[in-house]
Image 1 (tube, rainbow, N blue to C red):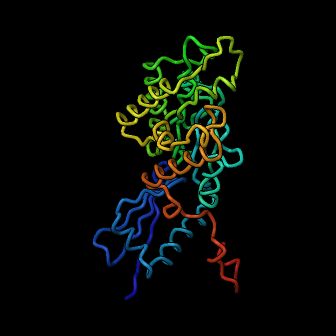
Image 2 (image 1 turned 135 degrees about the horizontal axis):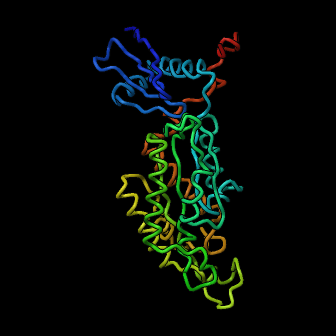
Image 3 (image 1 turned 180 degrees about the vertical axis):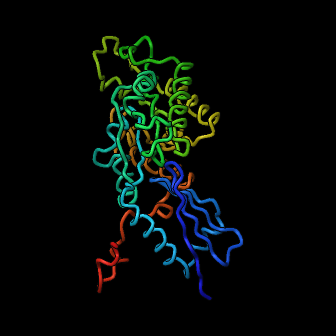
Length: 313
């Protein structure tokens, strides 16, 4: 039995709609494309197209769509956060692991700022993520996903050596809400993932102070970090967005202090691996996986060895 699908493109503002209609489908498959992602409207139709007999057809349609949209760039994922995000592109970092994971499909872009809290992060949002020239709020450069990873510095105690970084809980909650609102207003379709601050090893924080610490007391405590983590979780619940509860997740392991934290706050390679795995899970739950994201150019296995250039037409 042969399939005779037809595909047509509809461009509306900055969204591209690819509708693939099949004679076998009373309900057509509709896949909305922006320059970043595919939002599958009909799950049943998508599963049919992914059946063994139709997998080559699906790959052909998707690859040809992107090959003929030469003005389009790869989808993007932004990582917005403090030093734990800034350091995430180091060897074994969770950001580097994300970039490797999506190496043929998505560009992972770092926007990490060491020492920043949500007050400062909110203040500089327009500079870090400038508006599109059109000023319509739905930028052509909308990322498919974005992580927001703040709270470790907000949780600095107000009477300790890093008090200038402290942000009260009620303000932290408001700032997180405002940051998410900023992204949702600018990029309504972008998947925003919150990440709670990690747990704190207080003894290690005394051994590795970042500033002069005449009191000899940790500038952060695990209990305080937990309070900010719970607020982060609450904000995610109120806004209906995914969240990685890193504070709880890491403490499920008996040797979390030694295994996951290098100085009582920042992450070891094992700690980075935890973040990577949790973020990948949230992205997959939100519909963003290697299987759902087409490669930008043909894979070597799809290039005809007898006529290689034909694959790039």
